[in-house]
Length: 512
Image 1 (cartoon, rainbow, N blue to C red):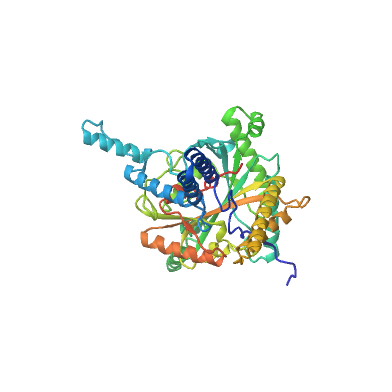
Image 2 (image 1 turned 90 degrees about the vertical axis):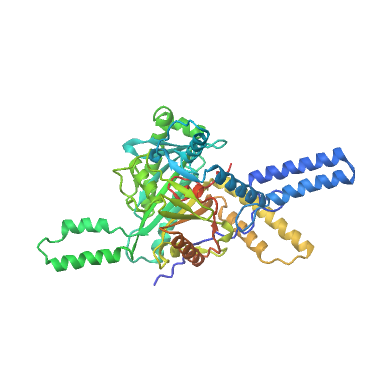
């Protein structure tokens, strides 16, 4: 046996995020609490007296409480209120139901008041964009490679390109083999994090589903001796059908995010005008990443074509469609009908889906080895159709070092203030400081290590409500074996959250 040390990483430890005026807040939350502070001071000064002071304090305290994020879900009470209100508004307006334009039946010209109401409901229900995937444009790169252009109001546009890989070589492998592959993948991420790099993030998507016996049956039809005894052929066919549902197959994808910055646009101009040049440059970058992926033991990387991506997106909504069935789907016909309930999204009235986020605070603060997520991939005993998506935003070392230094300063200040008050630490402060100090130590100049920010999502799919709830429990149990204490099931938002588990790069807000 090898005595080489096992490669480990610390992914958790960020139990409590840091924010303005204490506590964790989003950028919107910081803006809201700042506005409340300004409004409170203005009212206190203009009104004067105890009444003005009390009114100003009430406004500030209300903003402070409503914007403070929970360490369990990462959402503030104000956000929860907005989400509940948004859900009720969508439900009343009929926007929780979707019929794609290519599947919608035309309605006659309305002539009565009832007809006009029905036409309004039809218009709200009939759309050509998936919830959570608005602002998407399909571009075509060289060799019909699928390039997606994402435009969202108030955010920087970006491109995404999907690469399918076959995963690491099969068979028995030593831990050192996995460690070498992980180090090579880390090198890939470091190459992307250069200051002059055009790729800002990479998403890994793993689709796990029961083995499709059709592929093996086609192989058997071509290779089985037609003169073999009929009883033997029938017995072999029964064996194939029996084992198909008991085994699982995996499909792996890498998705690149390329922000459309001024630097990107200048580089793309050499490849062509406008969006055509963007698509060509995106495909060129994807081929470069494919070369790096081979060095990380990710076999046979190939860019996903437009038809294959359309078929994959259709399959992710309705697994009844094979993932490789491309003859009857295009970039305009992959979207399926659905209705959204509070606890699930139902596609084609046949498949139920639930989506969960992996909160950073739920991941164990202890170092984990390179196969820490294996129980989610292989450790579920019952058949569960599931998709696991991990998004990683890479950061240049200087930027990551600056953030780590700020976090260490804040954590040490909190620790020192608690010691001064004589407060007893429940372990949260020590773990938080240890995590930020470890990041700062890893990012020291000359280490070759760059920064990264990650988030994760999982989706389970089943043919009935009872089955999808049982699958959710099985997934949560497997996550617990990975050191993930809890999952954040995105109730009322399962339809808009589903694209976060698709190979299109959605579900992670870019940081400035």
